[in-house]
Amino acid sequence: MKKPSAPKKIALAYSGGLDTSVILKWLIEEYGCEVVAFIADVGQDEDLEGAKQKAFRTGAVEACIEDLREEFVRDFVFPMLRASAIYEGTYLLGTSIARPIIAARQIEVARRTGSDAVSHGATGKGNDQVRFELTYAALAPDLKVIAPWRLWDLNSRTKLFEFAEKHGIPLPITRDRGYSMDRNVLHISFEGIELEDPWEQPRPDMFVLSVSPENAPDEAEYVELEYDGGNPVALDGERLSPFNLLARLNVIAGRNGVGRADVVENRYVGMKSRGVYETPGGTILTVAHRSLECLTMDREVMHLRDSLIPRYAEMVYYGYWFAPEREMLQAAVDESQRCVNGTVRIKLYKGSATVAGRKSADSLYVPALATFEEDEVYTQADATGFIRLAGLRLKVRNMVRAKKG
Image 1 (tube, rainbow, N blue to C red):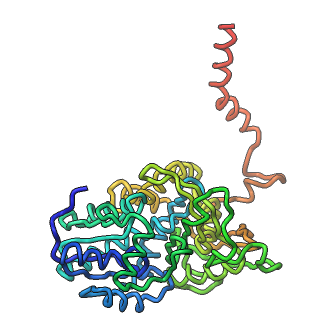
Image 2 (image 1 turned 90 degrees about the vertical axis):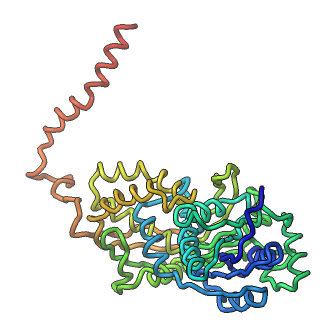
Image 3 (image 1 turned 30 degrees about the vertical axis):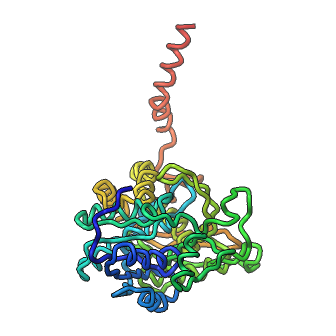
């Protein structure tokens, strides 16, 4: 790949991990430019101040921590949950949904600091490079994009460690053990080491947010979630901000072993990859939201929205959050959520999250219609004509086939 013209100042999406620690120093050496280390707080529960100081020690001229926690959950996670988005039926998109907000704020940092380029630590094999750079293209196409993994010759973990050791860069992991991990308030992901073999079971000590279902309490725990317009607004009767509600659910679900997923997924760049995910609070919200929709959403609206779930999930997974088609679809989704109000009770037990009750002032469930007892609302004989008309095309098809022998 041809190198872009040398930038004067680069805003780097920085975490303090192996890749971005090496990248910060490499950018300075390669381009002789200034580097601003931008650290996004999306609820990863890490020592961000320590990462900031490490960035300065590695050579950054500026370093900043941006608190995106509430905005992340309110404006990215919740809209995605309103759409019931799940990628390939299993992945709750924890990493995918964080990239657009990180890239968008990175652009703001670049503008504020006078940077003429942005950089990220995503590899040339992964989805994140696409997610970052599609956001750059949508919001700041004038900025240069530096993608070191597609430029340098440090193409292995061994070379990265050697570079870090040569330049005295401290790292949070060692050569012999270290999963590729991504964490935010919605989830944590694990890739690499034994997980590269899809036959291998994850190590029990790998998990961070949840206990194993076998070690979860022997008694079920219940939670109640109140919804307004498709968004959870209260937990067990207490109104909470979006971030605090999700963070508290993570603790509750985690201690009950809820939210683990082992996935072999299709990356946008064309290969399959295996990842293990913990999404404890998000799993509860997915189950609760669907349950309330079943009670309050019109049948045809639900079926139409459901037909669009794979497309919406692809948009998030591929990195098209700021694309016009996602914004258009979001408007339709949000219109469908106006009636999704009420309360859901969820039972948590040894890894499972199941619905234990739901109620809503907007419920379309009418007991007088659904009852098996005698009623004065529904005339059962009307079903005869309905079925006759519904089956007419099937009868015609059979008649034609019979004539043809």
